[in-house]
Length: 60
Image 1 (tube, helix red, strand yellow):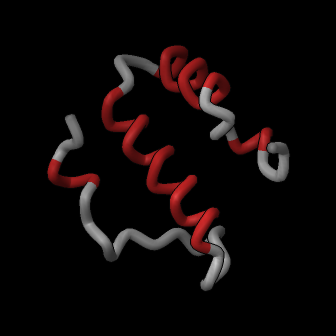
Image 2 (cartoon, helix red, strand yellow):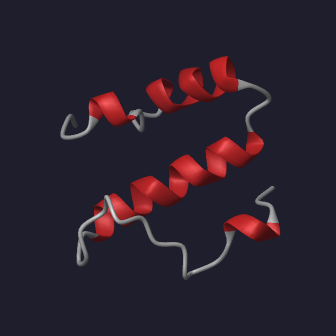
Image 3 (cartoon, rainbow, N blue to C red):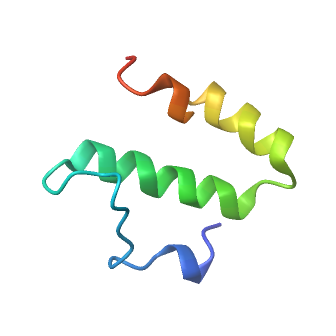
């Protein structure tokens, strides 16, 4: 279940270039996971499992 505070369409990240829809989707997924993870270790595990960890940028 997504919390209401993670649904805002106005969430922007200066690190995501304008027009980079895939990057924006990845950032939204990270924010959603951050709101649902129990702790930092769980968040890191989930991000890595889903290929969303910032260290995996550009890998597909």
